[in-house]
Length: 287
Image (cartoon, rainbow, N blue to C red; front, top):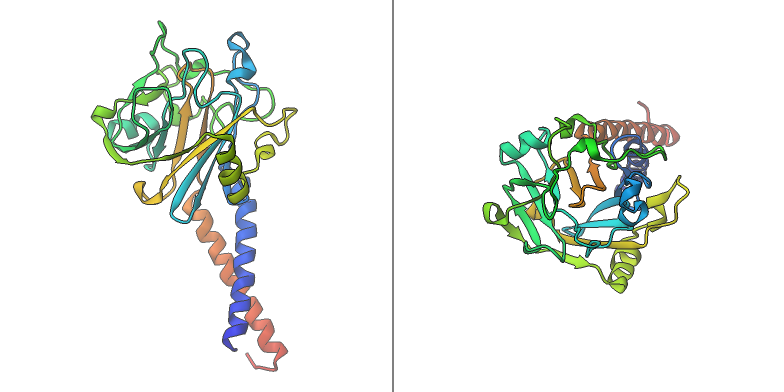
């Protein structure tokens, strides 16, 4: 078989594996669409007494492209926050440990992206989470997170009752002390409407309507994101999550398990073998 035919068959296998990969991931953690991994949060899980839609997060999406990691958010809570309330930090956990244990073992990374807190924006390692107490007399726990009625989990890929956040009566960690963490690198913010449109939407195919698919909501009024160098974080699967520092809403994203891709690769080899066998028979080559 010549090189051209082998390349054609490999292309067929790659397309098959990619298609099945997208289908498999949609049934597991996150939803793969246009190369973005989406975590779709409940669109009505913010307590009504706090303004409901003004604090709603509709979802988060992450994409790797050309050595960069891109993170995007859609909802009604702006980058600059509302009133005295702000975005917390986006925690990354590459270990197989629950959040608190990973914190105790120094396994957490975080991205500070808020324009209105006192922490320099960037990627940090060895972070120690701090509890949600800023300008508040009470401490919010995971039990205080609202429950949505639109069929989605109340923290995107996870529920606030997930064992990852156990114990549920523990405080919500929204940030970290940069003085006790390791600075790893800068981020680039996409908070201007033109930056969002030209970079996240036009170039990287972020789909805002996808954030509200299957709900009775229109896309959120606020879309922003940021990027950073991929080599600032470890390789492997992870759980990433962020909360508003008022405790009204949050969102978590979980990547698929490596075993899924191993299985798909095995299936791809089976397809390749089948295609080669058919070509040989068609060309009169004995088996």
